[in-house]
Image (cartoon, rainbow, N blue to C red; front, side):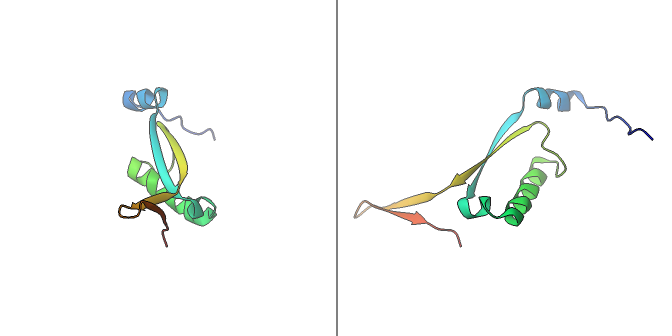
Length: 82
């Protein structure tokens, strides 16, 4: 039995033709943990409105390291999420 073809709305077609860029900054440890990254992707897709696909979105996953500077000594310190 052939699959039923889904018709896209004009809005969906426009979004697919010109995808919205979404940047997700992720702690480096999460990028190397398959289960954590998969769970995070599911949550991001849910917030974007569709947990099943990325249609219309150009999602860029970037590993992030953050530093804060002690203003008195001008020394950087890396923030580490636990």
